[in-house]
Amino acid sequence: MPPHHISRFSDKTLHYIAKLFDLRLIKLYHEPIQSEHKDFYKSTMWAKKFLPTHLIDNGILRKFINKFGILGKRWIQIPPDAYGHTVIAVYEKNTSCKK
Image (cartoon, rainbow, N blue to C red; front, side, top):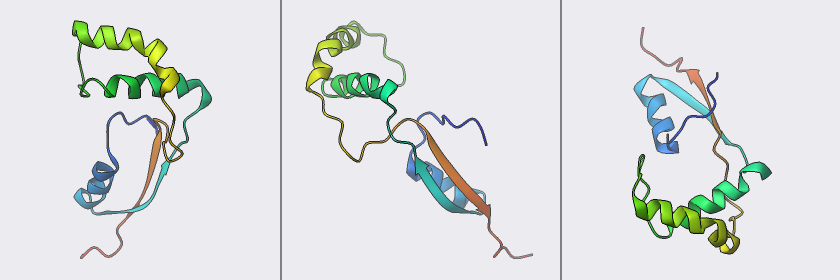
């Protein structure tokens, strides 16, 4: 069910949700990187080369690195196993519950 953009939830978190709510995880589907997101992906990977990932970072160094990402992203290759920002987790109610 929407929303399908689940932010920074890792696969590990999605597996834990199944355990927490006594569900069975049927499938995790990661959408491939869409062509309109490739530049953003490359810019993000460029910034990660120099700075750790923070939820909020308004520092001057972050702004400087991001500006140079316009040039730096040319040297970033997208690996074949990379995926986009959308993931779908399919759960099923665990029928082996004790009644």
